[in-house]
Image: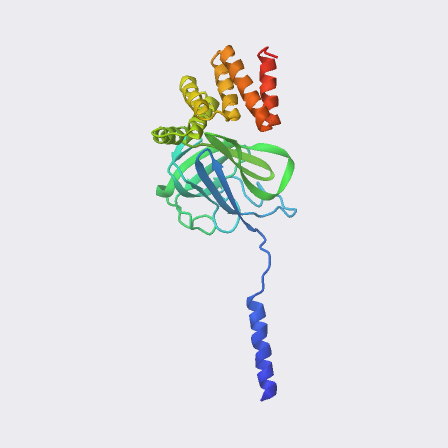
Length: 280
């Protein structure tokens, strides 16, 4: 009886160990999160590797619908409405299906994201957008399938798909200007020096309305006598507007306050500008 109990215990322990067994997946899952302007973008996908195989035109046939990765369909989520290669796409989650070609890929954003691979029954009503993008050949092969969000700027980025020697990029635009402008309008009901500075810096960077940027940076500086970084931006806005005298005066104030604060970086930035403007 004792021997039987020991055998049963050994068997149970073996089952427990088997249940806990973990092994790496051939195509591990990955999650990419990126802020583009003021929009959150998230991509979830699985990453197969070449492992000596020829990928496009072989493992992944040309002109056939592909899940764009492995396992469950690849998905992308936008927190705001976006424009993808000129096509409007509502905020939300989409499966990314592609049809690779030798020279051009077709990229489809599909509203049903719960497919293992490609949909068994394709539903055209669930196609949110279809775009085409040209293939770019890479000189160095990429072993593991990779999706990137690159070429970042305030108003958009590029969704990149890389594997083997192939790269395709899908450009998308985000509504940063509209969101930032609305935020600025709301905050300016009772702004602080930092609010004025942030608004002026944004308008200056986007070259949206320099007169308004000047108005705001002047208010920011008037509210913060120690804001050498604000005075620095003030000098750049003045220079951009052709007010060289005002730019020089603002740069000198910024440099003096930066020296008092022990910030050598801003001292040098102002010195370089003053030299450029013939004031040193």
